[in-house]
Length: 540
Image (tube, rainbow, N blue to C red):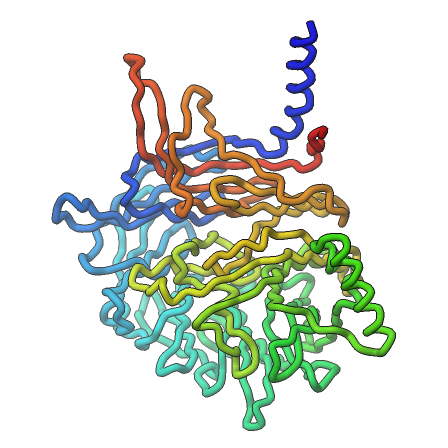
């Protein structure tokens, strides 16, 4: 009787914990561990998975494999497209029910060594485009909108944006971009308005930094140019920025700012841009972010708060150390959710951005082998730059992430709440954002990969309920077992609502029809649902 009650109690206590993370659907493709992984992008109907693959045992022409699924991971037709030997996938985009794959010959920056294939997922015929009219450049961004392909990169160390007309093959160069001491911080496309926004930074002859927002139509015409006024404190300047989508004819530019000529982060700014191009800015420092130090152990946090109070009493606002980078700005209609990472960077290529701050290499490095892109990122535009196999990974640096800082603002810029989530402070060579956020206006889930496990944190109405709870990766079929997981192949992304997408390679143990033990190597795509409200701490 006691044994039965113990089992019942154990099941009762464990069930809510297990239900926090639910592995809902799973799609598998049998692959060899040495083959390329599938990359995924999200569409309005589900997702697209694709890869370049070559049979190493033969001299067959390499093929580009692509298929789609619905939101329940039911697979559509597999489309296999031959590609030219010696060419690698370096860019991609999804537009108007078609996939555009950009291939490049080796390390060449010459446009004659690039071509694009337009693929209709459920059709056999594909269209190839010649890129020889486009300027030779080191490509940083590629996307398609309407009847134009947009290319952004560096030509002779200067930034350039070009529009390629799909029908006529004519090329238009965006004016006001190609200039010395200029850097493109963000490129975003707005399909609803049919425009692209360029966030540009440049330094004048006195080395004073300016940040400009320039909007172009698809013919390359400049529709507006906005130069937000200098920050209120002349000793400060904008470090980075994220342009939000338009909401009721207004747009916001949000990011970190800090002291000139120093690696000293002061806080977060929000610049609201109205329909007339007028800009109003607000600033958030350690004086405003009451819960910034919540990630620290209690005694350390108390010491920091006492030190902060002493500085504030002297009229000083301490800087934020080490590196502080805004990763996402989620437009909510009635405000903004801002996610920033606090981390330490140790990188042989880590040099001051614009002669002052660390460049965007520490924030997003599209050539990192860990990098894979979602279909639509409303904060950074379409980032379609997969891993370049020719990139020298030994030149990558190391990053140690300490905390994820979350800030919720209303439309007037008032702080609704702020809080901090502790991160494991482990070393990684992935410079991208540490975690993936799901937020519904009340529940905030923050999830990341911790080795071969999922780590979940949960905030409800601004209050941290739990942090870094670990969950094993599970299969859908209870008769099968995971024999091995290739940890470096795992990728995790927020998909929609409270659903995440987990992909990677595994070796699965199963029984065949004759009851014999068998193994198979697979690339898997799993839909993971989360609900932190079901959390119940385990009794000690």
